[in-house]
Image (tube, rainbow, N blue to C red; front, side, top):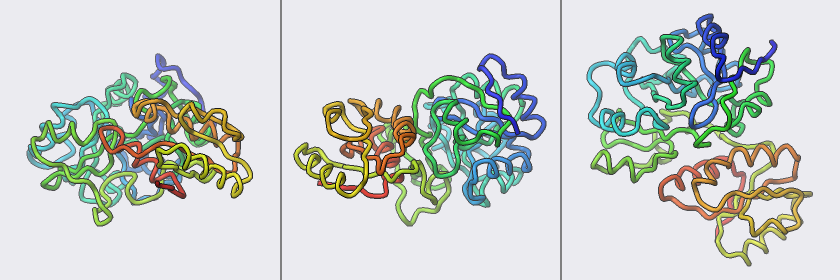
Length: 332
């Protein structure tokens, strides 16, 4: 299969491909997605095939609005869902709800629930509108790899596996959506994202629990290792520069070469490659996956990330992604 990159102002071929039961990679405000008609189980199976994704890992269904959401769930929406939809849709928030029997098991990953969000990116919305149906879409990468934030990332992973990639520039957020389970009470934060726990609790007026080891795997990213480049990732969750320097020296003895994703003050450290991680947590979130991919292209012995854990706001999402990508975490 030849993969064609389309500009964002030429969506007709992609819409026709979706109508014909094909998959298409497209930009969203979070990361690039690999989508198929959510009402076509055979088309959705192609997503799993293209990504090498386990079939019990559910897909997120992308809709335009609350009206399309209501077609995917039985009965009235829980109050939790209503409040979050009105506060954050369209945007980087996914809700897990009891699924209507019409939602395919392929999309649900065999679960009784469905994950749904309304993207704000104009290309994603135009595709849904053009298809006249919701689009099921996980991130457009090979399963387990860092999520793509650029069309070139998608091409690297999926060239020859998908007919079209729509180039909409860099993703605005750079991390996957926040996922909240509204099928339980109190609601549970299954995957942290750009919309932080504090903002969710303010809208809901009640605590939002954090998913733990015993939490049912009802959302993408919970059951399998994710976000990892090919080189092992070592996360230095530390603030003391002297301790960090000592740990880097030890790692230089362990690995043939090191690539650093770190604050700018570490640029002069003798590593094979360096990429600044950013000065604030929003910048870190936006560039994390891009940094993984760019450093991984240099084939280092290990990628070392220097960033102290912060659980406030989007910091919880950064810590979550680093924790899943890292083969080792070193703390003070």
